[in-house]
Image 1: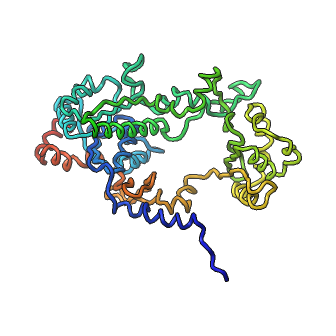
Image 2: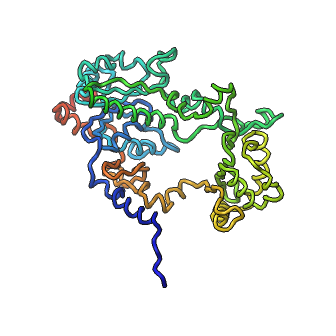
Image 3: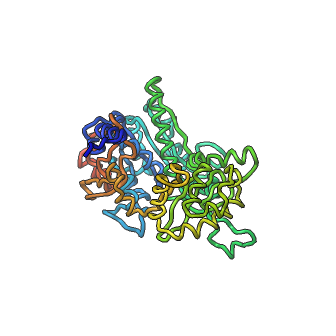
Length: 449
């Protein structure tokens, strides 16, 4: 038997794995291990998400909560709590030292100023003006530490007509105000009323997608500020508004309105910018179908046996299929066809068509809509280590998404999942202020920590 020659991609896969395998992350240096981050997030996952990204890259991150813990610890499905911590925070408490500090007290504010003197970065999510009212605004803290980078993530920004409203930043408010959610959800059929089709309303996107977006942009802006500080020695203030950050994802819809005066209306899972592009029912759930070229759309029609009936040979351009009436027409024709198969059967049909179909190797994209269980047991993601459990010394074995990107020299990593409220008071206050047990007991008695 002739030797099987390994494909080039397999050789490359072996090579790159040897360089960036997450299983070897702890053998490598951390890109940000010389930075100290103070996470002063309040009621917001945006700040926690931002500091998680920095902590995964090695920044010594100190999470400051009020005595009793921050509200984000209560975010959890069915109210499930693990050692007084909700499931959501087990993910975003990663790699952070947790201390308590009451900023409503003068002594607590003085201690925060001392923290700022040690820190490179301070992240806060209080309503605009709150830090200034406490005497903890950027101008005040910059006098103590001119190299400090202070990043504020708020609902309305640090300036603007609504900045003084004193409203906390809420993910769903940001989704609603971004204009993105306006175009989500099912279409209200022509001639129907909301009373007749009550489900034809905008749809919330995922767990705090707006907070995650503003947290990501905040982390990016912080790293840019760190780079600038390396060149100039100067810190700076960063102003991130969550709705503003999420609006960045609105992509062509903004240009469509600005250029043509057209509002992108609700259109279910369809998209007038692309075709074939949407979710369709199957016997056991649903699939995503993608065919962004005319040939791919024709190939899909061939796969479901409608090539001749729908006269696909006569199609010369995708342009008509971008129109709403055409998309709705063909969606109603496609739905009963995909519903004849399981998700796996449709996927395999696409794979086989690429080998021997009329238009092979052209074929549409078919992707099964999987459950969380299926994603966590997917061989590809398991092999890449994204769901490898963290062996946390307090919470035990915790599965949380980790190593969101791979890197050959300074990869991110999860060292521990979370900490209970005030868990690191002893270590951090001794390390930064020289406070021993007696002093901590005194501060606790006064309600400072």
